[in-house]
Image 1 (spheres, rainbow, N blue to C red):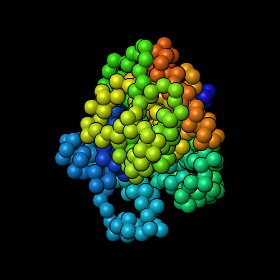
Image 2 (cartoon, rainbow, N blue to C red; image 1 turned 45 degrees about the vertical axis):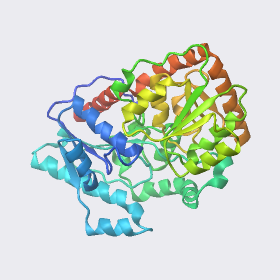
Image 3 (cartoon, rainbow, N blue to C red; image 1 turned 180 degrees about the vertical axis):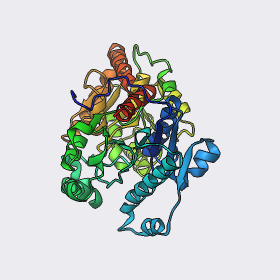
Amino acid sequence: MQNRGQMNMANTLSDDTLIILIAPNVTEQMGGEGIKALQIFQEIKKIHANTIQITHERNRIELSDRLKLADVYYVADTKLALFLWHSRILSKLLDPWFCYKAVKMAETIAKERGLKRNSVIIHQTEPNSPVIPRTISKRHANVFGPINGNIYYPPIFRRNEMLSARLRRIFHMPIQRLNRILFRGLTKANFILCAGGARTRDSLLAAGCSPDILVDSPDCGIKDDILAIPRVQHSGTNFRFVHFGSLRFHKCTSFIIESLAKTKNPVCLDIIGKGPELERCQKLTEELNLGHRVRFLDRFTDHRDLILFIRQYRGALLPSIEDANGIVVQESMALGLPMICLDWGGPQLSIENQVSGFLIEPNAKNYIIIKMAEYLDHLSIDGDLAERISLAARERAEIWRWSRVARDWINLYARISRK
């Protein structure tokens, strides 16, 4: 993108510049967004010591007591917040409430430190939705993102949508056009990190954001210590594949199980994780007489143990129909595990089909299952193919190295502070 949104220029950020990161959840205990926000804080802080985090009070025990993180400030609940929390209709206003309180806290901190306008960068790293109204600081520079979200089921699966998801899909663009008039916080940002490709960019443009402030960025990074682990090298045959993560309907774990019944080779699958789909997948395995080829393993309490464990496999699968990013994909590619995914959502942006992984068009369930079986067969017996994909996947993963992503963002901050 040849405009203001490029991030390939090295700039120097003054040590005196205060970076204030804002996210409602900064934790390893509340899913991918919380983990991402925590890693952003840790990685930015490594490079720029004058960085603080503002988050919700509920994260205090983990961040302050368990992780012993300094320079974290907490937004406490108010009576209004508790009312919103208990309201089924108004609970969606919790994120805008938090954003408002956090920005006001950030401005207070900057004022108490006697900092001028161009000496403070307020970066709201979460939530990642492009439709949530945002509070803008009128005193200091504003950065938002990575913004992603607005991912919905492929057309053939929309009969399975919950009503809430269907309403979000139908009213997404009308809401953005309303935001263009009523809630213009995002439009006044200095930069917005745009992680969802065209679908996110189109959404933000509909909300009135200038294309000049949209900066393409990864949704999430990969820790350097994961990329330091030797790449998995492939040769000969290996019939073992893995699927890991939360077992929910949109992950389509059952499709993988059904594909095993279509393979010509004795492909085996380990499913690591828990979730509401676990029992259904176990039952399906029994019905297809695949108990000798499918294992269900519990979640790993230590993420690094999981990373080291999955190095034994020939490849990994994530046929998700609603993942805006897919950290599973990024981590597997970083290790050199060929991925099999759907040509949809986050994996679609991460994988070059037939080069750094395999993508399947989500045009029919049977088609997905048959193509998945074909890829499992080819990969399991063709070590040269697996090695070629592995090398390309590992090379692709370099763009997600957290230290590189964080440095790019700091260069972006520097471009703001120099004005």
